[in-house]
Every structure is written in C-alpha cells, then in structure tokens.
Image 1 (cartoon, rainbow, N blue to C red):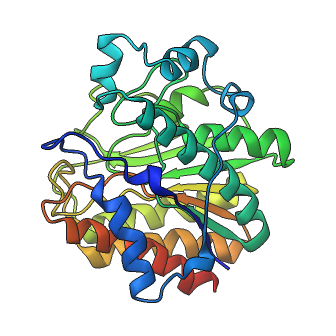
Image 2: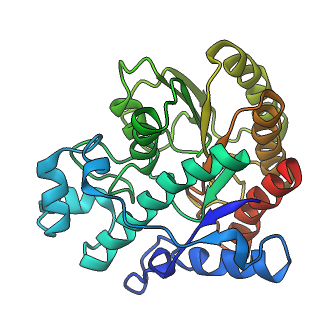
Length: 300
C-alpha cells in the first residue's frame, strides 16, 4: 500500500497575496481521495521530527533560533516566509513525515509526503521557502538507524538542490543528482555530485532524453539501497518561475521513468512534492497528483 504523510499543518495559511501556493497542500489530498487514487488508509499522520534526528544535519544554534522565532531579518527574508510558531511546527511535521516515509518505503517499496522536498535549507540557515532540509534529515535517519549504506538523491525540481548538495558534500554514502534550470534560482549553485543544467525553454524531448541518458547509469553505478525523489512540478511550461517548457504529459513521463527504473532495480523510493507555481492552481494540483497516480500504477 502506498503510504503518504499529511496533516492539517501542511496547509498553514500565509498572509494574503503571498506567492507561495499553500492551497495545493489542502487540495491535493482532496483530489486524490475524490478520484480514488488514494483513500484514508493511504494517509498517515506524521509525528514531529525529534530534535536529536534534526541535529544530525542542522546546527543546534540554528534550530534553537528557529524554534524561538529569533532568525535574523536577513535569514527571514532568505526563507521567503513570515516566520511564525505555526510555520515552524509545520516544518517539524513535514520533516517527521519524510522520516516516517523511509520506514514505509522500506516496507512497501515506495512512500510519499504531500509536502517536503525542502532542498534549499542549509545546515545553519533557511533559504527559498525551506526552513529544515527534510531530504537530508531523513537520509541521515536512514543511514544511522535503518542500516542503509548508500543513498541516491534524484532532485528534479527546476531549482538546484543547493542546500542538499552542500550538506552532503564529501559524504560518500549519499550521491546527489540535480537536474535543473541552469539560469534559474539559486543564482549561486552549490556542487552536487552530478549537476545537469538545462537551458531556458527546454522542452519535452530534450528533458526526457537527458534524464534517460543519465538516470539508468547512475542507478547501475551507484547501486543505492534507497532513493529520495524530489518531484517538483515547476518544470512545467505553465510555471511562473520555471522557465522550462515541459508539458503535463512529459512531467508524468518523468515520474514514470524514476519510479519505473527504481522498481525494476528493487530500490525503495521516498518522494516529496517540491515546487510548483503555475498561474492556475488546477495545473499545480493535477501535476502533483500525477506523481501519486504514477507511483500507484507502477508499484501497486
């Protein structure tokens, strides 16, 4: 059974006019239930990530400032969010959801998180709508507590996973692969183990061909025991921030490629939603829903 993390904190409201689309976190579970892709049995209530597990990745001083809402003005601006106690709670639950998804993925082959993919967060600071790096914290959990020896991060958000790349720099047990818009945010790119920068206007054939060229070899060479898939849908041509030109169908083919290759190799996958900023909220929800539909069709 596909198990997916979600609770009421995920759809935490932001001030009116804020460009980050929080409504998608409420609407996506509703859509997946309505169409029958998922039922109540598929969803699990995540626990808050424990301080001990977070501190495997994040600095104690940073976590303390975050919990006490004492970030500097510079850091708060970099986060992109107006800081609040409820927003910090949201991040703790999202990170906890990704940790628990590791257990479900190891049991069932795949598990998801309705939020997460917060790949811009560094050890000591927030950035780009990311306060805690749930991929990194969950990876550290898998390494320390689940006897996983090799992890592959497949980050296909349109923005480079700079925080994840920096955190795992020099960590031989985690291979970071980011395929992103070369001229998109962040301006300063960190060095992943493999970075593929795509040109503005990159379309379906070029995108899928590039992924097909790299992904099978990575899986064969790295032989990971667990994959983290950051499945951002800001690669769509309708996205306000993406600058690529993927169709909805190609985005779904991308997901099928990742899940299909992992399933064929017997590698469990934890997937997180990542970004999506299309003008029409329906486009965002449908694209994210495709990831869950595809996981269901491949694994179950």
